[in-house]
Amino acid sequence: MEFQFAVLSDPHVTLPQTLLSYPGRMHMLEVSVAALEVVLDHLSQLDLAFLLIPGDLTQHGEPDNHAWLGERLAKLPFPAYVVPGNHDVPVWDADGHSIDWRTFPHYYRQAGYGDTDQLYYTQVIHPGVRLIALNSNTFDTRGQLVGRVDPAQLAWLEGILAAASEPLKLVMIHHNLLEHLPGQSLHTVGRRYLLENRADLLALLRPAGVPLAFTGHLHIQDVAEFQDFFDITTGSLVSYPHPYRIIQVQQAAGRTQVRIRSHRVTQIPDYPDLQTQSREWMAQRSAAFMLQFLMHPPLNLAQEAAQPLIHHLSYFWAEVAQGDARLHFPQLPEPVRTFFEGCSDVGPADNHLDIHLQAQGGHSWQPSPLG
Ligand SMILES: [Fe+2]
Ligand SMILES: [Fe+2]
Image (cartoon, rainbow, N blue to C red):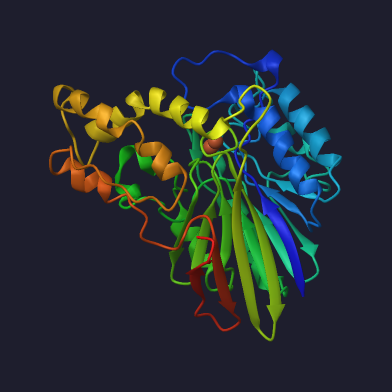
């Protein structure tokens, strides 16, 4: 069996009438619709089995943006499947700006939510391929949105996994299940991108032979691997490098080859050199973000010590976001230098790689010749 599918993430759809000014924001919400249209145009020329979009479909759960995207996806020549990100269901009750989280499925009846009012679902989306689409947005007792899969969903998932017989099971969820930066779970800034109870989820998925999860949220290109489980996170269409992935699957004799190839949006009408313009946009707006890195654990620098170092780190996040980062900061003092250079990519290749799945486990990966 051979088929191909695509993944794009965090499109943060912002129609012009919904664009608010957020001072210093790193995301180019102005390009959201144009960048998405470029990608959908490319994908529509391919013979795709399906498209996955792991959340942050809209900027702030605006009804106009959800309605536009739901209708746009329904017109594609292949089925699209979505899950909500934290930006899609940001409030418990509708507040005039964002939808009520319970109404999310109504916008995506043709994108996975055909017969459920829950925020999670499962479907056989291709012969022998089951998608398990999970909701990682939970409101805590104080009404705060946190990245967590609730107990009812975990119980549902356990039943689904026990009954599923498809040879390939794919998970899609907004929050990350594995660390994509070293020590991420220990870092105040990095921790919020990880699912809080990822250990509970992995304890169900790994014994059930689920090898791959497609995630978003972090806005970087990264593939992380832990004990035969891969978390493939895809960057955002509204931030550098505006990536998306096309993935070929070949199955034969208990062996599955997953060939991941990544692409970028290079130009749209108002941004003829989007890659350069977007990289500069990010560099010019990353000071506050880098200050958080410097002043929070593990570095814990005082503001007076952190401030003079920021300009050396202007392109740090752009390098991380594009994946396969090789970071060198000879100008930085220790231990700051070691910390940031330690974010160089050491795991599986992030943009172009082949993953070999074995029926009995013992999966392996290698960078593709393109990488
Ligand atoms: Fe996002
Ligand atoms: Fe997010």
